[in-house]
Image 1 (cartoon, rainbow, N blue to C red):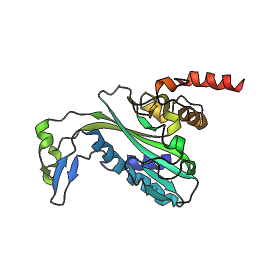
Image 2 (image 1 turned 90 degrees about the horizontal axis):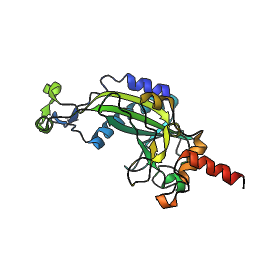
Image 3 (image 1 turned 120 degrees about the horizontal axis):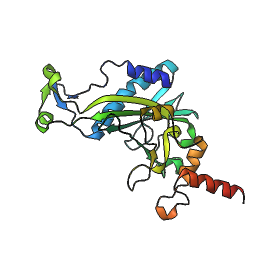
Image 4 (image 1 turned 90 degrees about the vertical axis):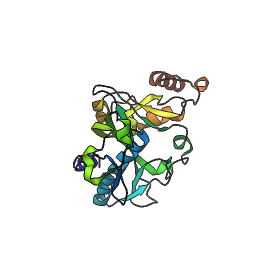
Length: 243
């Protein structure tokens, strides 16, 4: 699956040169620099590759019904399948080629704990959880150029807010970190590294079971936390096993 999807993404002609949104009168509106818009563009691109794999593997491709539901795509034999595959698309940017980067990998207080909150199917029906991650270099755009309306006759003039797109696909637990990923929200943070770290899955957990145990018990506020990192978690686990 991983090789098929990455190969299909690599073969999409000009797949990463999307420069705007077109209406039926052939008017083109530049993308701008809104990261939410760019994330949606990359998700649309990924869907083509996931759909191609689903056809070959004779699986259903089930899209998320709601914007905040996990995952973006579910692959399954049918809706009752207890071995579903979750595929989530994550996007981030860097300002310089050598910059390290990271992602947020979803909430640790919703379906990881309840099994059914904000997720397409019950969590225990998924056997695999994958991330397709995009990293791009952010390009500043002149305000006047970004505010113009273009046509299909002058596509080359439309400013593109990203370049040097890189992509990887890896199991979620293999790229997860041991700290929250953003501010005051209860999001799992990924490792922070370069593309090779994500491709190789250089996360902090020994296996998926440890990843799940860590984040299911991680305190939602600092005062509730019995551990703050993987070292403290393992020490606590060893202490409890010896009592």
